[in-house]
Length: 628
Figure (cartoon, rainbow, N blue to C red):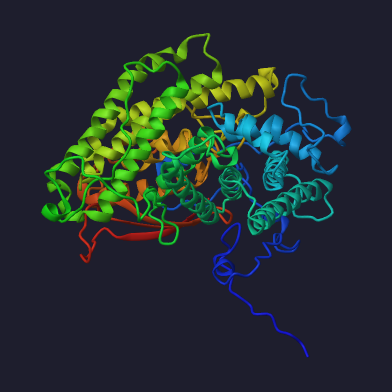
């Protein structure tokens, strides 16, 4: 007789699926996908440039699309992985793995490429001790972290060696195609090994809190890298739940804290900072595209206690509860360092998101303009904090042009100002039900575009000097459109053929440019934002510039075509067409939801009216599928 084993439907939650945990069964983990599951031509690891020989079918006519910046075919970077581990010649001052870091011969090169290259890419514009020191140290004692690091190193090498369009990459006989596929297979195999290592450690109840949260960060980065934003959100949700429990436990243990407390039970500040940024990133993504359940990020725990900051507003008197009780944010008159400014900005953004999350889950949407005094005063405080942050940051912001400031720090200063300005605009507009009110922030939108152009122009200048030292022999610009003549959109940063696609785990210039491209109705500023997104292909966490620019272009075409249909002779000359100089409020739309697939590069968009009441018919509702 055969003994049948009960089968349980898996929900793919890492490291152990929910069904196995509830039924107290041993979760066997997640095997790697079969070799035939992902044909080579379907591997899309990171954002790629629009090739000169292939262009996406435009949705609607636009003068912007005629002069679209088309990046040249990607050239293969100099091969980074050596033939053997013995061929590696590391820097004598760099971090060196000790003998107890056990690596297979094929794993050594991927660990080295992570240490020497991937760390810098993942950090974005800001040096991050989490990537450069803490993760590498944890590899010595935690197999799950080691496997995740090797997976990211192999994945980065796949991006590095994406073939040129001229190579028949779909042929299984092509040596280069087989090499890239080999990197991919190792990446997904080590990702699976990391998940299984977490399951094994969990079953033995020896996994430290630090390791689990760190693994959530690494696996979420892997998922974002390959375009699986749903799985990345699950990783972040799991980490947020663990982080909330740890904070509660540490708070309860503070009165009886003793010297025997294990270091493994302490959540390090650098790890909390890193995960907080990841959560802010995911929350910003959710707020922009309005994900359905179960992919909604909640920063506030359902059991989170709230303390009314003003005794005049209580649940019994207002029927709405009280604002969330958060730690006070004390800002200095001047920030002494860029890292201090970034930490304060992260804390401010986290507090704002917690406030808005609690507000919209508690307050009737129709009563935003008549909030109880406690909520109103609490919200007004964030406006003052944003202004105080900007004042304290001003001297650092003005110093970015100093010759002694390194190039990466200059970009960090500019991008942080972009993020803060973007946060300030979006927060103030949360209490408005008219898209027309965004016009009041045209100076802020122009500042964001100018800073983004500055960042991209400097990156392009350095990339051109490195890739084409002799400008007379450079062929990159010759591969652009021949009709790419000077127009209203030309200028520094709008044509960047030397910049290669990149992935970073941190936010940079993409989210603020998305807001400008969809909320600014000035035709010039809006097109500048879209063009910068297109000329600088990058993925910042889950924010993909190729997808964002495509969505923004469709929204722009929808609004402008509606105006021109009603008044064909209105508008101003822009390229070879006329575009409306003013878009009335009745023709403006806001994004209501975006369901997308980054790997297949399609997105289903729904737009409609701002401030419409639930149950009402929306005359502006529209939907479309776009691809890129």
